[in-house]
Image (cartoon, rainbow, N blue to C red; front, side):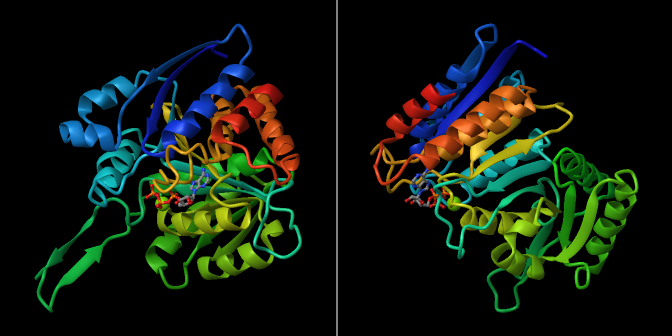
Length: 344
Ligand code: ATP
Ligand code: MG
Protein backbone atom coordinates (compact mmCIF):
# COMPACT_ATOMS: atom_id res chain seq x y z
CA UNK A 1 0.00 0.00 0.00
CA UNK A 2 1.22 3.47 -0.81
CA UNK A 3 2.09 5.41 2.29
CA UNK A 4 1.19 8.75 0.82
CA UNK A 5 -2.07 10.25 -0.33
CA UNK A 6 -2.10 12.96 -2.94
CA UNK A 7 -5.57 14.47 -2.57
CA UNK A 8 -7.35 17.03 -4.73
CA UNK A 9 -9.76 19.06 -2.63
CA UNK A 10 -12.72 20.86 -4.20
CA UNK A 11 -14.73 22.62 -1.48
CA UNK A 12 -17.00 24.23 -4.10
CA UNK A 13 -19.99 26.36 -3.19
CA UNK A 14 -22.06 27.19 -0.12
CA UNK A 15 -21.75 24.70 2.72
CA UNK A 16 -19.28 22.71 0.62
CA UNK A 17 -16.57 24.96 2.06
CA UNK A 18 -17.60 24.30 5.65
CA UNK A 19 -18.14 20.55 5.44
CA UNK A 20 -14.97 19.80 3.48
CA UNK A 21 -12.92 21.54 6.17
CA UNK A 22 -14.31 19.03 8.69
CA UNK A 23 -13.68 16.09 6.37
CA UNK A 24 -10.03 17.10 6.11
CA UNK A 25 -9.81 17.56 9.87
CA UNK A 26 -10.98 13.99 10.40
CA UNK A 27 -8.77 12.64 7.62
CA UNK A 28 -5.70 14.25 9.19
CA UNK A 29 -6.63 12.88 12.59
CA UNK A 30 -7.21 9.28 11.46
CA UNK A 31 -4.17 8.77 9.23
CA UNK A 32 -1.16 7.09 10.83
CA UNK A 33 1.92 9.29 11.31
CA UNK A 34 3.84 7.65 8.49
CA UNK A 35 1.22 8.38 5.83
CA UNK A 36 2.03 11.60 4.08
CA UNK A 37 -1.11 13.52 3.12
CA UNK A 38 -0.65 16.13 0.43
CA UNK A 39 -3.62 18.25 -0.55
CA UNK A 40 -4.19 20.72 -3.35
CA UNK A 41 -7.25 22.92 -3.24
CA UNK A 42 -9.20 23.91 -6.37
CA UNK A 43 -11.68 26.77 -6.74
CA UNK A 44 -14.23 25.16 -9.06
CA UNK A 45 -17.83 26.24 -8.72
CA UNK A 46 -19.74 29.50 -8.86
CA UNK A 47 -16.84 31.85 -8.00
CA UNK A 48 -14.61 30.49 -10.75
CA UNK A 49 -17.49 30.58 -13.20
CA UNK A 50 -18.32 34.22 -12.46
CA UNK A 51 -14.68 35.29 -12.51
CA UNK A 52 -13.62 33.48 -15.70
CA UNK A 53 -16.67 31.91 -17.35
CA UNK A 54 -14.96 28.53 -16.92
CA UNK A 55 -16.35 25.45 -15.26
CA UNK A 56 -13.69 22.78 -15.87
CA UNK A 57 -11.02 23.09 -18.55
CA UNK A 58 -8.85 20.42 -20.16
CA UNK A 59 -5.88 21.84 -18.24
CA UNK A 60 -7.85 21.43 -15.00
CA UNK A 61 -8.57 17.81 -15.87
CA UNK A 62 -4.90 17.13 -16.57
CA UNK A 63 -3.98 18.66 -13.22
CA UNK A 64 -6.68 16.77 -11.29
CA UNK A 65 -5.61 13.52 -12.90
CA UNK A 66 -2.30 13.60 -11.01
CA UNK A 67 -4.04 12.87 -7.71
CA UNK A 68 -4.94 9.63 -5.94
CA UNK A 69 -8.47 10.80 -5.18
CA UNK A 70 -10.72 13.85 -5.07
CA UNK A 71 -12.76 15.15 -2.14
CA UNK A 72 -15.66 17.35 -3.24
CA UNK A 73 -17.98 19.47 -1.11
CA UNK A 74 -20.79 20.73 -3.33
CA UNK A 75 -21.02 22.53 -6.64
CA UNK A 76 -24.00 24.74 -7.42
CA UNK A 77 -25.33 28.19 -6.68
CA UNK A 78 -28.56 30.02 -7.53
CA UNK A 79 -26.48 32.78 -9.21
CA UNK A 80 -25.42 30.36 -11.97
CA UNK A 81 -28.00 29.35 -14.60
CA UNK A 82 -29.40 25.89 -13.92
CA UNK A 83 -27.49 23.11 -15.66
CA UNK A 84 -24.28 25.06 -16.36
CA UNK A 85 -22.30 23.64 -13.44
CA UNK A 86 -24.09 20.28 -13.49
CA UNK A 87 -23.12 19.64 -17.11
CA UNK A 88 -19.99 21.79 -17.29
CA UNK A 89 -18.42 20.46 -14.12
CA UNK A 90 -20.08 17.41 -12.56
CA UNK A 91 -21.01 15.46 -15.69
CA UNK A 92 -17.88 16.55 -17.55
CA UNK A 93 -15.68 15.24 -14.76
CA UNK A 94 -17.65 12.02 -14.46
CA UNK A 95 -17.23 11.23 -18.15
CA UNK A 96 -13.62 12.45 -18.40
CA UNK A 97 -12.53 10.29 -15.45
CA UNK A 98 -14.82 7.41 -16.39
CA UNK A 99 -16.56 7.30 -13.00
CA UNK A 100 -18.80 4.44 -14.02
CA UNK A 101 -19.53 3.20 -10.52
CA UNK A 102 -21.59 5.52 -8.37
CA UNK A 103 -21.55 4.09 -4.88
CA UNK A 104 -24.13 5.07 -2.29
CA UNK A 105 -24.24 3.23 1.01
CA UNK A 106 -27.43 3.53 3.05
CA UNK A 107 -27.13 2.62 6.69
CA UNK A 108 -29.51 3.72 9.39
CA UNK A 109 -27.17 4.65 12.23
CA UNK A 110 -28.09 4.77 15.92
CA UNK A 111 -29.75 7.99 17.01
CA UNK A 112 -30.69 8.93 13.46
CA UNK A 113 -34.34 9.59 12.71
CA UNK A 114 -36.06 7.76 9.86
CA UNK A 115 -39.53 8.56 8.53
CA UNK A 116 -40.23 4.81 8.59
CA UNK A 117 -42.09 3.18 11.46
CA UNK A 118 -40.01 1.42 14.10
CA UNK A 119 -36.26 1.49 13.62
CA UNK A 120 -35.70 -0.93 10.70
CA UNK A 121 -32.26 -2.42 10.19
CA UNK A 122 -31.20 -0.61 7.05
CA UNK A 123 -27.75 -1.49 5.74
CA UNK A 124 -27.43 -1.69 1.98
CA UNK A 125 -25.32 -0.27 -0.81
CA UNK A 126 -26.53 0.96 -4.18
CA UNK A 127 -24.16 0.54 -7.12
CA UNK A 128 -25.47 2.91 -9.78
CA UNK A 129 -24.06 2.89 -13.29
CA UNK A 130 -22.63 6.36 -13.89
CA UNK A 131 -21.78 6.90 -17.54
CA UNK A 132 -24.58 5.41 -19.65
CA UNK A 133 -28.36 5.24 -19.68
CA UNK A 134 -30.13 8.45 -20.69
CA UNK A 135 -27.24 10.60 -19.37
CA UNK A 136 -24.96 10.49 -22.40
CA UNK A 137 -26.54 13.41 -24.25
CA UNK A 138 -27.68 11.10 -27.03
CA UNK A 139 -30.90 12.59 -28.34
CA UNK A 140 -32.22 15.74 -29.84
CA UNK A 141 -35.12 17.88 -30.73
CA UNK A 142 -36.89 18.77 -33.94
CA UNK A 143 -39.46 21.49 -34.61
CA UNK A 144 -38.33 23.04 -31.32
CA UNK A 145 -40.60 25.70 -29.93
CA UNK A 146 -43.54 24.72 -32.12
CA UNK A 147 -46.58 22.79 -31.02
CA UNK A 148 -45.19 19.85 -32.98
CA UNK A 149 -41.90 19.71 -31.09
CA UNK A 150 -40.34 16.26 -30.77
CA UNK A 151 -37.67 15.45 -28.19
CA UNK A 152 -35.74 12.21 -27.75
CA UNK A 153 -33.38 11.18 -24.97
CA UNK A 154 -31.85 7.87 -25.92
CA UNK A 155 -30.82 5.47 -23.16
CA UNK A 156 -27.42 4.02 -24.04
CA UNK A 157 -26.59 0.58 -22.65
CA UNK A 158 -23.48 -1.24 -23.82
CA UNK A 159 -22.51 -4.81 -22.97
CA UNK A 160 -19.12 -3.43 -21.89
CA UNK A 161 -20.61 -0.72 -19.66
CA UNK A 162 -23.22 -2.96 -18.08
CA UNK A 163 -20.84 -5.84 -17.45
CA UNK A 164 -18.21 -3.78 -15.67
CA UNK A 165 -20.69 -2.26 -13.23
CA UNK A 166 -22.48 -5.56 -12.66
CA UNK A 167 -19.13 -7.23 -11.97
CA UNK A 168 -18.22 -4.50 -9.49
CA UNK A 169 -21.55 -4.99 -7.70
CA UNK A 170 -21.06 -8.78 -7.47
CA UNK A 171 -17.61 -8.28 -5.98
CA UNK A 172 -19.01 -5.86 -3.41
CA UNK A 173 -21.84 -8.26 -2.54
CA UNK A 174 -19.39 -11.14 -2.15
CA UNK A 175 -17.33 -9.09 0.31
CA UNK A 176 -20.31 -8.44 2.59
CA UNK A 177 -21.63 -10.87 5.21
CA UNK A 178 -25.07 -11.40 3.65
CA UNK A 179 -23.76 -11.73 0.06
CA UNK A 180 -27.02 -10.64 -1.59
CA UNK A 181 -27.37 -8.75 -4.83
CA UNK A 182 -30.54 -7.34 -6.40
CA UNK A 183 -30.74 -6.17 -9.98
CA UNK A 184 -33.27 -3.37 -10.34
CA UNK A 185 -34.61 -2.52 -13.79
CA UNK A 186 -37.87 -2.45 -15.72
CA UNK A 187 -37.19 -5.28 -18.14
CA UNK A 188 -40.84 -6.01 -18.82
CA UNK A 189 -41.33 -2.64 -20.53
CA UNK A 190 -37.83 -1.38 -21.35
CA UNK A 191 -37.25 -4.65 -23.12
CA UNK A 192 -34.08 -3.96 -25.11
CA UNK A 193 -32.00 -2.51 -22.31
CA UNK A 194 -33.71 -4.78 -19.81
CA UNK A 195 -32.73 -7.85 -21.81
CA UNK A 196 -29.09 -6.76 -21.94
CA UNK A 197 -28.96 -6.02 -18.20
CA UNK A 198 -30.66 -9.28 -17.24
CA UNK A 199 -28.50 -11.42 -19.52
CA UNK A 200 -25.25 -9.85 -18.38
CA UNK A 201 -26.37 -10.11 -14.75
CA UNK A 202 -27.14 -13.83 -15.10
CA UNK A 203 -23.90 -14.50 -16.96
CA UNK A 204 -21.76 -12.82 -14.29
CA UNK A 205 -23.81 -14.49 -11.53
CA UNK A 206 -22.44 -17.87 -12.63
CA UNK A 207 -18.98 -16.69 -11.58
CA UNK A 208 -20.21 -15.74 -8.09
CA UNK A 209 -22.10 -18.86 -6.95
CA UNK A 210 -21.96 -17.78 -3.30
CA UNK A 211 -23.88 -14.54 -3.99
CA UNK A 212 -27.67 -14.80 -3.69
CA UNK A 213 -29.37 -12.86 -6.48
CA UNK A 214 -32.80 -11.48 -7.17
CA UNK A 215 -34.41 -9.35 -9.84
CA UNK A 216 -36.89 -6.60 -9.06
CA UNK A 217 -38.76 -4.07 -11.19
CA UNK A 218 -37.95 -0.52 -10.18
CA UNK A 219 -41.52 0.29 -9.22
CA UNK A 220 -41.67 -2.69 -6.88
CA UNK A 221 -38.28 -1.71 -5.49
CA UNK A 222 -39.55 1.71 -4.43
CA UNK A 223 -42.26 -0.01 -2.41
CA UNK A 224 -39.84 -2.43 -0.76
CA UNK A 225 -37.37 0.33 0.03
CA UNK A 226 -40.09 1.81 2.22
CA UNK A 227 -41.89 -1.31 3.50
CA UNK A 228 -38.98 -3.79 3.81
CA UNK A 229 -35.67 -1.92 3.52
CA UNK A 230 -33.94 -4.63 5.58
CA UNK A 231 -34.25 -7.08 2.67
CA UNK A 232 -31.60 -5.23 0.63
CA UNK A 233 -27.85 -5.83 0.82
CA UNK A 234 -26.35 -4.68 -2.50
CA UNK A 235 -28.38 -3.21 -5.36
CA UNK A 236 -27.13 -2.73 -8.91
CA UNK A 237 -29.05 -0.60 -11.35
CA UNK A 238 -28.80 1.77 -14.28
CA UNK A 239 -28.04 5.49 -14.21
CA UNK A 240 -31.59 6.86 -14.14
CA UNK A 241 -33.20 4.29 -11.81
CA UNK A 242 -30.14 4.66 -9.60
CA UNK A 243 -30.55 8.41 -9.42
CA UNK A 244 -34.08 8.06 -8.16
CA UNK A 245 -33.76 5.14 -5.77
CA UNK A 246 -30.61 6.51 -4.13
CA UNK A 247 -32.49 9.66 -3.12
CA UNK A 248 -35.27 7.49 -1.74
CA UNK A 249 -32.66 5.37 0.02
CA UNK A 250 -31.11 8.47 1.59
CA UNK A 251 -34.52 9.68 2.74
CA UNK A 252 -35.35 6.44 4.58
CA UNK A 253 -31.93 6.06 6.15
CA UNK A 254 -31.49 9.38 7.88
CA UNK A 255 -31.60 12.03 5.20
CA UNK A 256 -29.03 13.94 3.23
CA UNK A 257 -27.17 15.14 6.33
CA UNK A 258 -25.60 11.67 6.60
CA UNK A 259 -25.62 10.37 2.98
CA UNK A 260 -22.18 9.78 1.44
CA UNK A 261 -21.22 8.83 -2.09
CA UNK A 262 -18.34 7.84 -4.31
CA UNK A 263 -17.89 8.36 -8.04
CA UNK A 264 -15.52 5.54 -8.68
CA UNK A 265 -13.22 4.30 -11.39
CA UNK A 266 -12.61 0.84 -9.91
CA UNK A 267 -9.50 0.11 -12.00
CA UNK A 268 -7.99 3.40 -10.76
CA UNK A 269 -7.17 4.57 -14.26
CA UNK A 270 -8.38 7.97 -13.00
CA UNK A 271 -8.82 9.40 -9.52
CA UNK A 272 -12.17 8.63 -7.96
CA UNK A 273 -14.20 11.37 -6.35
CA UNK A 274 -16.00 11.27 -3.00
CA UNK A 275 -18.71 13.70 -1.95
CA UNK A 276 -21.73 14.14 0.28
CA UNK A 277 -25.04 13.55 -1.51
CA UNK A 278 -26.41 16.93 -0.45
CA UNK A 279 -25.88 20.12 -2.41
CA UNK A 280 -24.52 23.53 -1.51
CA UNK A 281 -27.55 24.46 0.62
CA UNK A 282 -27.29 28.23 0.04
CA UNK A 283 -30.02 28.84 2.64
CA UNK A 284 -27.71 27.83 5.50
CA UNK A 285 -24.29 28.56 3.96
CA UNK A 286 -21.79 30.42 6.11
CA UNK A 287 -23.79 29.99 9.28
CA UNK A 288 -21.99 27.00 10.77
CA UNK A 289 -25.24 25.03 10.73
CA UNK A 290 -24.33 22.40 8.12
CA UNK A 291 -23.93 18.84 9.31
CA UNK A 292 -20.50 17.60 8.13
CA UNK A 293 -21.36 13.94 8.80
CA UNK A 294 -22.08 13.05 5.15
CA UNK A 295 -18.71 14.48 4.13
CA UNK A 296 -16.90 12.64 6.91
CA UNK A 297 -18.57 9.39 5.80
CA UNK A 298 -17.45 10.19 2.25
CA UNK A 299 -13.90 10.42 3.60
CA UNK A 300 -14.39 6.88 4.96
CA UNK A 301 -15.36 5.70 1.46
CA UNK A 302 -12.28 7.45 0.09
CA UNK A 303 -10.02 5.74 2.62
CA UNK A 304 -11.46 2.33 1.81
CA UNK A 305 -11.03 2.94 -1.91
CA UNK A 306 -7.35 3.70 -1.34
CA UNK A 307 -6.88 0.57 0.77
CA UNK A 308 -6.96 2.16 4.23
CA UNK A 309 -9.66 -0.21 5.51
CA UNK A 310 -8.87 0.05 9.21
CA UNK A 311 -8.88 3.85 9.09
CA UNK A 312 -12.16 3.84 7.14
CA UNK A 313 -13.73 1.63 9.81
CA UNK A 314 -12.50 3.97 12.56
CA UNK A 315 -14.11 6.95 10.85
CA UNK A 316 -17.42 5.10 10.45
CA UNK A 317 -17.33 4.00 14.06
CA UNK A 318 -16.59 7.54 15.23
CA UNK A 319 -19.61 8.81 13.27
CA UNK A 320 -21.81 6.05 14.64
CA UNK A 321 -20.77 6.75 18.24
CA UNK A 322 -21.14 10.49 17.77
CA UNK A 323 -24.63 10.16 16.31
CA UNK A 324 -25.69 7.82 19.10
CA UNK A 325 -24.49 10.31 21.72
CA UNK A 326 -25.90 13.44 20.08
CA UNK A 327 -29.13 13.81 22.01
CA UNK A 328 -30.77 17.20 21.53
CA UNK A 329 -27.70 19.43 21.79
CA UNK A 330 -27.28 21.63 18.73
CA UNK A 331 -23.65 21.82 17.67
CA UNK A 332 -21.96 23.84 14.97
CA UNK A 333 -20.34 22.36 11.88
CA UNK A 334 -16.96 22.94 13.48
CA UNK A 335 -17.90 21.38 16.81
CA UNK A 336 -19.12 18.20 15.13
CA UNK A 337 -15.91 18.04 13.07
CA UNK A 338 -13.79 18.53 16.20
CA UNK A 339 -15.71 15.83 18.08
CA UNK A 340 -15.25 13.35 15.22
CA UNK A 341 -11.55 14.17 14.89
CA UNK A 342 -11.11 13.39 18.60
CA UNK A 343 -13.05 10.13 18.34
CA UNK A 344 -11.08 8.61 15.45
P1 ATP B 1 -28.12 21.61 -5.06
O1 ATP B 1 -28.82 22.24 -6.20
O2 ATP B 1 -26.76 22.15 -4.84
O3 ATP B 1 -28.20 20.12 -5.07
P2 ATP B 1 -30.42 21.75 -3.43
O4 ATP B 1 -31.17 23.02 -3.32
O5 ATP B 1 -30.92 20.67 -4.29
O6 ATP B 1 -28.91 22.09 -3.78
P3 ATP B 1 -29.32 20.77 -1.02
O7 ATP B 1 -28.27 21.78 -1.03
O8 ATP B 1 -28.93 19.37 -1.21
O9 ATP B 1 -30.44 21.13 -2.02
O10 ATP B 1 -30.11 20.88 0.34
C1 ATP B 1 -31.50 20.98 0.51
C2 ATP B 1 -31.75 21.53 1.90
O11 ATP B 1 -31.38 20.57 2.90
C3 ATP B 1 -30.87 22.73 2.16
O12 ATP B 1 -31.52 23.86 1.76
C4 ATP B 1 -30.59 22.67 3.64
O13 ATP B 1 -31.55 23.36 4.35
C5 ATP B 1 -30.64 21.19 3.95
N1 ATP B 1 -29.29 20.60 4.00
C6 ATP B 1 -28.58 20.10 2.98
N2 ATP B 1 -27.40 19.63 3.37
C7 ATP B 1 -27.34 19.83 4.70
C8 ATP B 1 -26.36 19.55 5.70
N3 ATP B 1 -25.16 18.97 5.44
N4 ATP B 1 -26.64 19.90 6.97
C9 ATP B 1 -27.81 20.46 7.27
N5 ATP B 1 -28.78 20.75 6.38
C10 ATP B 1 -28.56 20.44 5.10
MG1 MG C 1 -29.96 18.85 -5.03
